[in-house]
Image (cartoon, rainbow, N blue to C red; front, side):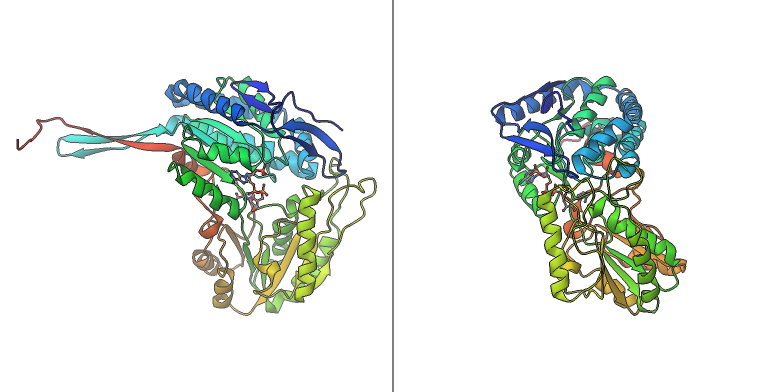
Length: 487
Ligand code: NDP
């Protein structure tokens, strides 16, 4: 199977290679096969991308918002028309089941382009009367945005960053994670076909060094990163040298709280989605499932019965629920946590090993796994595993569970299951989390601002908040009288 792109990078509206750059491969995680060979951007390519973006941004930022919006909405239509082709590519690059990529990746990217395309004409400021004279504000583009992605939702992350940035009149340089370099190039093709001027959206491939070159570059105004909390710290420190703005979407260890009055079937379904979808590789996953003691056994019985029915297999077969992890390297990390969970004394209910998937023996597989009787101090309850590993903890009452749920340096997401509406809103208000759900989990429509608090990040993607974050406010005081100078 091959998915070789025309070239590694997309700069100034054209594919280009950088033969001097470090070579790397993209592999299909289900088999280990090499599907593409690429080269990382050296400084020359990064400089070319920054120069092209700076030049192109001037005219793009000066267009009326509705014209920019039209381009984004056309790109949304193109992504939708190519959804199957891009979904197959995303499955090959990430290993995620096609059943998921068909609905969650390019499709959500298209929603995002459409939404911000619609908002582009509504970038506006305020006016205020100050006693005859007045002030007004302009929301202006920042300039060139460096967007750096993680490997779990490659094209969705590219769209979540590019769509609001472009709608606001910025140019973008996107660096995908080196593990999943391919679909961001398809977005570049779609945007070009939609009429985006050359240089306004660029893709440079590479490792952390390439990301660092962008973050430190004085020609870049803002950095938006999706990645680990440690990477977020390093990026923020590098960005501080030139005082760039940052949006950081980082890791999490989010609580999903199930009260005894909850609809248990819905709670079990949501807990499974919150731990097994995308083979557990979702930042906002509810990886600490707190279940009220009186319903714990019933919850676990239903959970195990449904987990047994999860279908692992050929990711390109739409009947398959779960693909492999993104890489063998990442699987080593996940497997180490399965061993840690056992050593710490958590009760393994199901999974816990490497399955044998017929015809895909070379893949980075791991079984969907549930540990029960997990306690707060265990590493599997404190550290982000980023695999299909659910930790179930139990609790006695509301006050206790809120305190324990908040006892983490992270604050990305949280969920509550209860039929008591007063309790639902009260508990959500008490949780330290940026993105929360009542009686569901992990739904992230583009209208909903998404992001974390504490060490899970800064700023928001999606929603109106994201558009504003790609603008700067210029205040203008207009004097209608005389200047009252005492000199
Ligand atoms: P990493 O933090 O390892 O990498 C993220 C991106 O940053 C990659 O493109 C990486 O390049 C690049 N990078 C790494 N170091 C630097 C640096 N010093 N300067 C600039 N760029 C750098 O994350 P993963 O790709 O491993 O993704 C998994 C993580 O992402 C998890 O922690 C997860 O929680 C988080 N995540 C957060 C989301 C959110 O919205 N909050 C959503 C999805 C994931 P390269 O990979 O090529 O080395």
